[in-house]
Image (cartoon, rainbow, N blue to C red; front, side):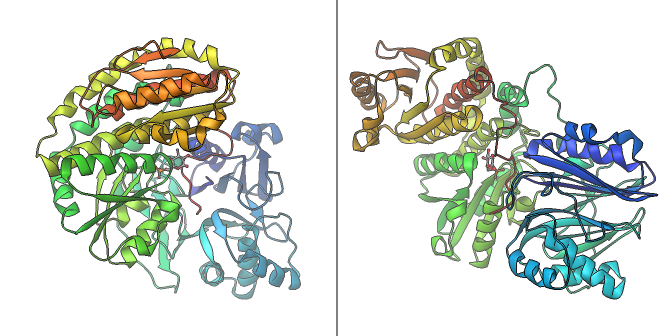
Length: 584
Ligand code: G6P
């Protein structure tokens, strides 16, 4: 999703903005741009494609100034092209804006502003922000007053930063998507992501919804949308946000898959007291509803099984984009799962839950994220920064923490999990086998993933990884559902991945594999025991059935990763996707 950065200080701003944009690259984007306040006015440089492409447009070293804003755009309104890339400028080009979110009433505002003589150059919703600001600034010549008048006309979600040719300060506002101040010794930052400034300072202030900020070199003023000053706490940002690098690995995604034993160790060995408090709180309401998006939703589906089996709690799981007030009441604990803690759908679900009087508990990786701050209680995943757009280590960490919580509530003992990091390590030893196996499937246009019971979320997650990383169509499903439709899609050579460890559902799933084989499917078996019915086989170690999903997903992540590499895709930045989806 869009990344925003602004800096005002004593150092040349251009390299600082470019570096900040690079750090936020992982969020996913299709174009980039920056605006620098120079002696000759605002210099706006934009390009479609990667941040590195900006240097092909102009010699960035030749542009210097002390105030600047930058943006990585993930298109929502308007095509991916230069006109729609941010920063967007006012009519005379003396003001620039960068925006993340969606202005839902932009058409009405655009018509009104065009009638008043404003000229629009893009087909984005964002451009109305700068024209509104321009209109109000011209009336009062007051940056705070102009931004207050602007935000009170906007509907939808937004975080934006505006800078002017004729004035040093940057002004920003937040309503629904994150905006963070970084307070440095040589200047101040305004970004959508801590990674935008972490190299320079660990002192942060998180803006809340409906707050604006006027930011100077060594000062800042935060107000609500009525203009009343708001006192804020400075947060010390933890080491987890440090600079992730690929190290010796070809991609972040591979590094993060291989890091899973370590990430799991961190989950298991984290401070026990907050976990106990979390378990206690979860039980204080009669009903439990779990929500999340994408991979986090799949972790929620796993939670349903493990909560039922171990904690004897029956939960509903609702995908965040479909979460409705009817799903909960005031006697509900809502457990929100999210790696980033910034997914708009998950935040919207959180708000619905809060409005309904529910207790909100969350599990997030990014400490200090909006979700962590908006929850009544939040547990960190502690798995370190995840850069690859497709979630990998955050998923296995979510499963591990969910298992720990359910086991503590249910039997007061989660010790079985201590063997899991080592078991995951042993599967990673299969990486070369999986890499070779991919060669037999390069022509496949469809993959199916089947499983039963607690393994179904892993079938769904395996298919999601394949879609995200390799762009090959993939579907995960309950094995028992094959005969109700999907079998019609099976022809000679159709790849089907079957997740089938030897537990209660083993034989039934094997029977489904036989049915698939009879129709020509080419089956990849993931199991604790080999069988002649599998065309290819990936062995996994035998563990307790409730822990097995943590193990099973790893070969599926590797399968999708190697398929993507084989097909020439960039697994770290899949097309059209974003790590942190901050629009509904
Ligand atoms: C995006 C990512 C997915 C992720 C989902 C939820 O769509 O591309 O990989 O699973 O968001 O993210 P969250 O940070 O809330 O877990």
